[in-house]
Image (cartoon, rainbow, N blue to C red; front, top):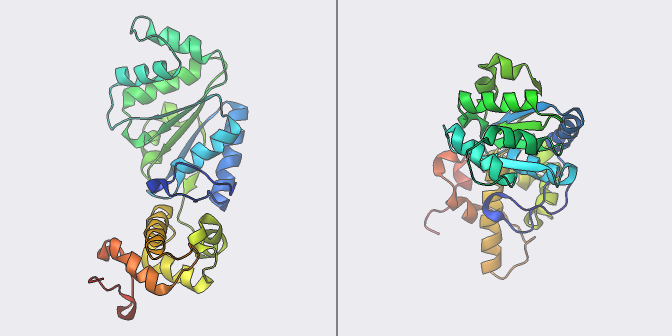
Length: 261
């Protein structure tokens, strides 16, 4: 699971999906859901790697039967049906669309992933529930969304009662930062544990998106200076931290980046 993976924030080259306990657990839960043709809801704060993890795991578990959708908030149900139909290669026509979608889904054991679930309307969620109730074989349904996604689904008891697993993504623990970041990207391959913990406390706080921002900034600086990617120094890190919002940094005065650099 630490193989190079695409889809990283900022399209960061050389980044890998590392096998944190959350990634391993998610892979197991997705595998179980596919086997049982079940529904599950993966939720958690922004920037914790939910979407990337789901995409990468499903490329291994169901590469030919996964359909991935992300709709804008309050997207009309008609548009959602058209998008599902398009991915199922159903001709563009609203006539008999519900039946044609049902028939197409019944041809294979599909996995339907709905990212940013917290933005789906009641009508959209009820339609997904109806699909799951009526189509055979049932599609596996994976809801992915922000921290409030669980509450969003729980407001609809008929749907929530069908969800068998509710895995929650949380920030990396400091021990996981030390264990996994050297394998995440070459920038960190020779970085000392104390430097990783310093940066995690100062800027990233276990958030993969923030680690990616920092990695990208350091990689760019090292490349500009003609240095190898593993030539980390705190001076380089301080220069990279200029790109962060100062209000997000927790640095002691002596470690504050020079904003005039």
